[in-house]
Image (cartoon, rainbow, N blue to C red; front, top):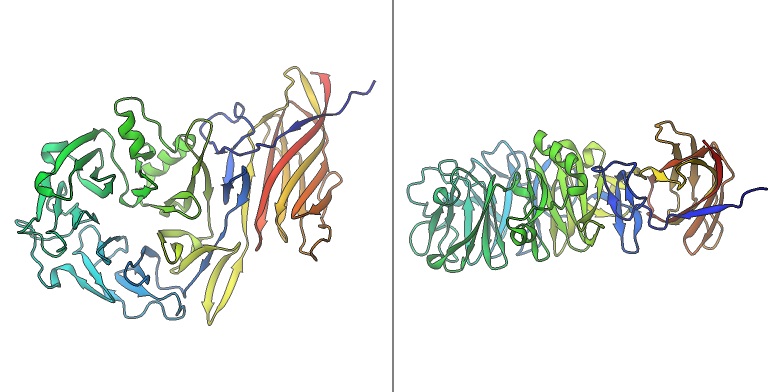
Length: 517
């Protein structure tokens, strides 16, 4: 007697995001072991990322720093030893009238204070930008240097609580300096002053300074110091020192909603979580990709972070390694941390700086020397005169080993049903692997062609099975026959993104119970 057909519904396929930390044979299908160029949306949809569309003609080097001005919404960008004000409405002449600095690197931190911007970099005199002009801070009217400092060259800072706060100068990298009230050029006299952290945390150096819930947070490499009452420095008080943990990257420290994220030596962390847990074991936000992150940190700490508010995710980009991790802060996994995917790009589109502003949204400085906007579904290069070259890119997700539920018998694979939303003109390759083998057993190319609204989607058939598509209200159901038997199954879907997004909605596996092995 023929055995009846059974099914395994995988509606929650990949909804927890990337997990490269745990054994793929023990992970549930709700995880992914590869998640390239994907984002996770509400309704647990696995969706292709948007593209990086270059807004201006490329300059002579990578854009190492980027910020949106507060006073007129123009863009400040750094290439090589120059700082520029870039008007995105004149894309053919973005790199003119640059301000020359003595810097050999474009790795500036851009700090806003009273609608002006202050550019800070290790070993460099700060640069002030007011209205439309740059100037070395030492050349501005009323400049008074900190007492007993020969060269004022802070590497980091913040503009908050009525003054500038800076640290990491070459001579005293463990001393925090603060300007007089509303006078960012005056560092001696009035209410200006400094905090010597030698007696607070011992041997360490200041890496980043940020405001947080009415306090001032000073990040070292191995410690974090929190001060209350920063609005009145004379009555400031040390409230907490978190020892044994700091940040490895100035540009990874960012406010995220009512929290503060930072990259420590062991991964991405939340300051709220760190202070709440105190001496209890800490949980990193990147725990599901911990080994990957720590390996990258050991090799290079040129890391840029950015909270993209309108998209609901936090990016952590390892610039020199050309890999960007995307943390979905709006939704948590079953172990209580953000869902993770990662992005990668062709070299000229690789992010080298990130910013999010009220006017221009999410902008990316790229290795190819341009400024890109996160939009549409191409990676687009600006040529000149409004002309562009659009490039396709690939997204990939791979499941862990799916246990087919019978430990003593092999399952006879019969059919796979896949529902996809959108994806016109995209091409997806579906491949299968069986029983912990790296060998690709079957592969099928699926193409959804653009057609008149309401017409059925077409398909092309690959190496196996009978493929069928029915498209209704942008939803397409793909069916393919499977063959062979297995105890474990791995699925991989590789999609060429070519102008349209696609979202994987659900997957159902049809099978029969096989003979005992």
